[in-house]
Amino acid sequence: MSTRGVIAFENPDDKTCRSIYVHFDMYLDGAGITLTQHYTTPERVEKLLALGGLSALGDKLSKDDPEPDAQDVCIAYHRDYHEEYDAPDEWESADKLLEQAHHMYWAEYVYVFRNGEWVFDTPYQPKGWRSVKQTLQELQEEK
Image 1 (spheres, rainbow, N blue to C red):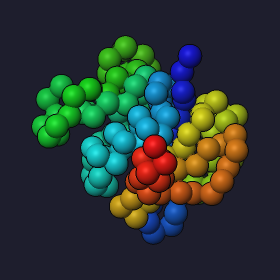
Image 2 (image 1 turned 90 degrees about the vertical axis):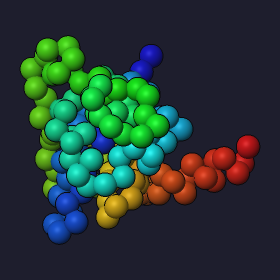
Image 3 (image 1 turned 120 degrees about the horizontal axis):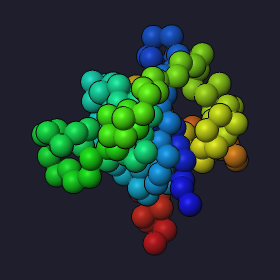
């Protein structure tokens, strides 16, 4: 069983988005932690999107990625499985992406890099865009 998700970058000027699909392990305490620890700049998020669709999100973009304290490498359909390149999809807004994420991808989570921070929502039961870091912290405090 897979936990599908979408990773997007929101353009700060016009609020349009570009997104990629990720097939495995996109739950909050997996992908959310990876995104907030290893994809923290617009440049790094752009490089992640440039990989196209992913089978799995990793801490590193490639084996040669100098990301400190990183272990797993992203598994990209095009680069690693030699499938046709699945370029990022373009969206009018993050809200439009969220509306379609369950129909197009069966996504359970949508992550958006917005103004230097990761936010997320759940397409099947939207609750509004929430800070990934803050939500992870709240979940940790509940334990």
